[in-house]
Length: 278
Image (cartoon, rainbow, N blue to C red; front, side, top):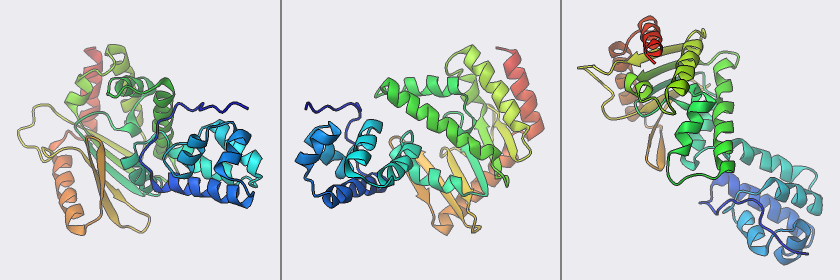
């Protein structure tokens, strides 16, 4: 039987979830008394593919998961382990820890000077943003990223409500990522989200002589245990910030930004004027 590699996924840097999935497959393979060489014809993937999955260096394809589950008689455990991976596959590796914290947060404050936050993006805006950032993703990668970016937005409607505060630079919207039509749809979406009872949306005007966010974008999050954590991201990297002194510094900056930005009502007015000018 011919072995295939149907996923198109490249090997990646292992993370805890990939390693755990690989260990799960390995454990059931050994339980079945099979070597990797004996498993590969059963799942119709190469020995190298099986090894990469077990070592946590490759995201398993859906076909691999289904075939491994059946071949190893894994009681559904392999599919359950894979479902956790699929929830996070569209997220950058360095963002996954923060995404996990978001799911349990009671409050989230975001200052963004680079692009509209993922929690506020439309599908068209997300697509336009993703397609222009090298290395160019495959069509499957684009769809995975968009799907998970949009899925995260369920947090906005989660009950009990999470308290959201967003401060976005005016210039981010005026950039018109994706073109005028995409931007009109984006502004309509921002206006709609801004009407939610648990969301405060503020715009930082382009002309702002006093500005506490010159060091870049960041986020603050309050956990269910009422502990605060921060997050800052750069090129190909992201850092969850837990040191109380560093978190306190971000709180001070965010407090200043909330004063310096337009209030929610004035921000709504500015967004409507921006839309009217497109």
